[in-house]
Length: 426
Image (tube, rainbow, N blue to C red; front, side, top):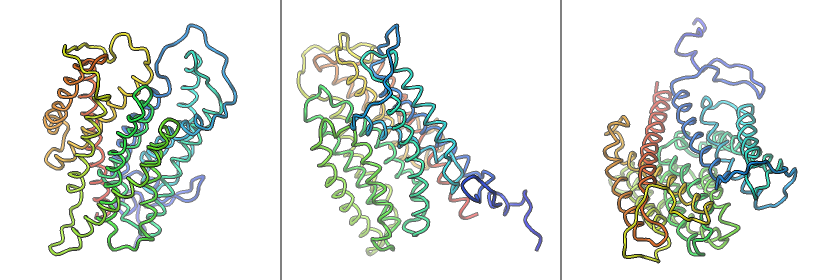
């Protein structure tokens, strides 16, 4: 039989090539690699936007730069710097061909470039202490995130703990979006009272239910020891989002652990009975979404209206994102970006519920704008009666744009999974 040529179907993506990290079996990108590239770029852009905003808030610049600090050894600051960049490195691996080695060059370029840009900009922010140790923590977080994705992928493949496709499911991608949302919730606690942090527990429970559902749907036939990589990986991923909560609300972070595993175990048992019992139904995504959505809505509404006190009789509204005279702009900005991230996830969830019925953003936009638009009108309308807050037309428009972006993220994720399925069955 003649050897496969470089243009034959069997040769595409199958010719080994040398790399600095060993031999790679994927020198040529295939359809699934391009869909992963588009998805990865969208997620990287979203995460980079959140990192820049949280790092530079409240954007009050001085005319003259301050003297940088070479070393900052505050453990909380360094841990936060590390945790903020770790999801970025994880998602950067999505831009590489499936199964390719860790892209250390790409991780170094993005990690160094973004972290040094942020630290340099902080020279013009009064009260900030830009330091090389923070930039180093950012870089290490980026590298650790990229290595973590690669290690988890290899572990899953080596132990056959789950189908590799489980790491790419649109439902699993909800976990990717929950992490920055939980982190932003932790950053926005300041000035909102000690009870504000407890609003994050519904998100933690939702993450546990997703992990339990995916495990039961994909790993029922495998022993518990082979489910461990995916289970611990999901818990570690969500724990990253709780890092900003630790300094201000350590009890919330501690309580989140049993909440997460209780939700994971309960929903794992429910889905296991569903897929193994009489009249077995292997579909688990839709039932899991029906459990996740109420938890998410509880958080979304409560976080939008918190604190639920100080109501006024006269309804007020404006265009600005923040009410006039805001004194603590940084926490207010964190809470505003938290709402943007929350409504991005809302758009993603609505698009996922629409599923195969809407293959384009234009087709799914009416459903997203109808459902999410109703939530925006209700929450912003209610905020108009909150003393010192008021409704914001600018925020309403921003939240709708975020929801449409979330819907687009879902479609990119779905297209990537479809390409992976075609690759595995082709």
